[in-house]
Picture 1 (cartoon, rainbow, N blue to C red):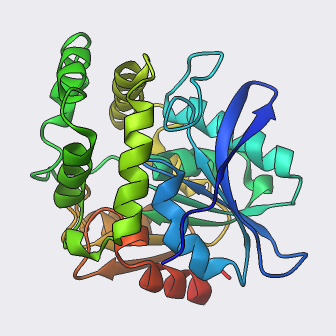
Picture 2: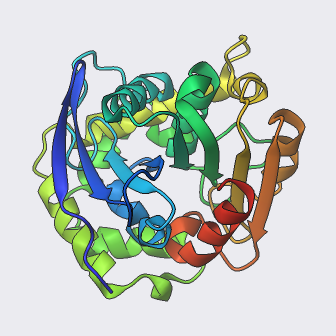
Length: 292
C-alpha cells in the first residue's frame, strides 16, 4: 500500500492552502478536487485518488484551519467561506471546470461551489454529504451540544488531551462499518498528522466554528439554503451513501433525488460515513459510470 502524496502549500490571494497532488497518468487529463469532512484532511482521499489517476489529475485540499492549512485571513469557516477557498484553488489550477468531490462537511462545501460557480464544476460527487435531514442518527445527536459557544471549546480542549492514536482509533470506530478495512499506513499517517495539528492553538476553535456554520445552514430558510442550492446545480451529480453510516442517514438519498436536477444515487450496504476510504473501489466505479 503506497504512502500518501506529500503535502505542499499553495499561496492564494485570500489564504494559503495545503494540498496533496496525485498527478494524472498522462498529460491533458481534467483536474479533480477533493474536499474532506469536519476534522478530516486531504489524507481522507488518498486511496480513491490512486484509483482515479488514469482519468483525472487529483488535488486533495486541507480546508482552511484544518490539518496543514492555516485559518483564513477573513476568519470565515462556514460552508460558504470554505467554498471560497475551493474556488480560489480551482481558479489557481487554471485547468478548466473540475470534477469536484466532497465528503460530509466537504459535501456541503462542494455544493456551494457547484451551485454558485457552475462554470468551475464539470461533475459533482458527494459522499455522505452533510445536508439538512429529517433523520437523526445515533452518531450526530451530540453535535448541537458541541456547537454551543463556550461549551464546545471546553469539550474539544478536553478531548484534545487524549492521546492522538486513541482519538484516531475512536474516530475510525465511530465512522466506519468495519474499521479493519483501513490500511495500517493510513492509520499511521493520520495519527502523525493529528499529533502535528494538536500543536496548532486554533484547532478547537476552527472545529467548533466550522460546525456552527454548518448547523446554521440547516436552519436557513432563505433562497440560498442547501436544498435550494441543490436545485441550481447544472452538472451531473453522484451521491454516495453508506447504509451503516452513523452520521448521515442513507434515507436522505430520496430527498436528494428530489432536488438535484441530474442526480445519480448509490447506497452501499456495508459502509459507514467515509465510503471513499472504506470502499474506494466502489466509489471509483460509480464515478466512472455516472460522471466520467
